[in-house]
Image 1 (spheres, rainbow, N blue to C red):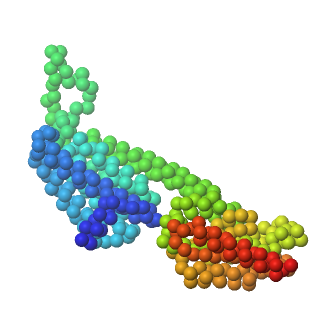
Image 2: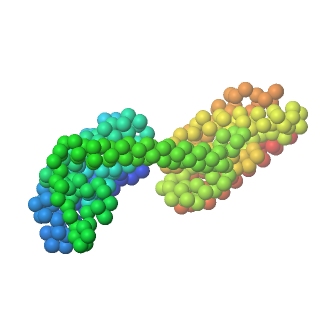
Image 3: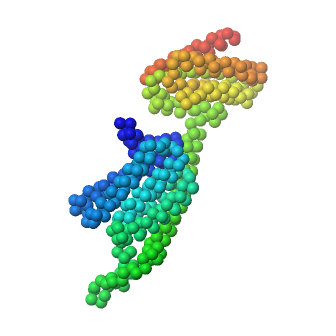
Length: 377
């Protein structure tokens, strides 16, 4: 059962933060689909829907199935996140495609470019060069193997390299009687060499396309990051906060909310200037953000208001977090003669009740703010 589970995870890949793992999984999935198509071709040929020599399709099915099973066994046995796995998967793909193109020759010649297309998912330039070499070797095997084993391309046998009119006689008869008498040279010059050039050009084009897509993706990610972040403090924006509440946080099993409202901001703005007021906001935001992790994120929801949302929170984790943050704020360097201070409120509960949790934390923060104001007047 464990093996079946691992196999299903390989052929039904999910996105992974490591792009090489994602690329490996999709290449494995494509190889599985390829093997499935070979079986379909064999089945249709057995039913006389296709007219390929059954011996050829049998050779293709058996050889490709052996290669596929050996390849998938290695992928199941070893960690596909290993750096060497991408070379193995590309090699496995090339061998699998070689089985197909050797049997079906010109019918499947386009399949030879699949490994080159796969490499566009990877960033490794060494892998791209390796793939080109592997595909050229595969082409040599395909051309010579297909000549004797597969559905031999008539052009490979008769060397038809001229217009159709050259083979039509005056009485409208078609004449082909020249057989390839220099097999090594002609197959290499007329088939292996031109295809190798095309594969090299295709690899270059795929590499450039991949680079452009990567750059556009990085740019889009950067723009999205800038749109989600408050430029002064680095905290997430209010729009991001509202979006996360609607699409993520309300589905959490448990959630924690901590509110802060900065004290003395107006006093600092009036006495020292807005430059120092901005410094106060930035200082407190930086302190709070230091306590973020994968589950906890800080948002700036107003000029001097911040909220931290804690996923999977408990009463203890929320109280521990607020204690650490407040101690760090209290011990921070003052702005002029005014110490850093922020009123706070917190609450926790189930994600489905997040509106109430937010209300409780917000109410506690305003009570704390009022008490602070009364104590200093």
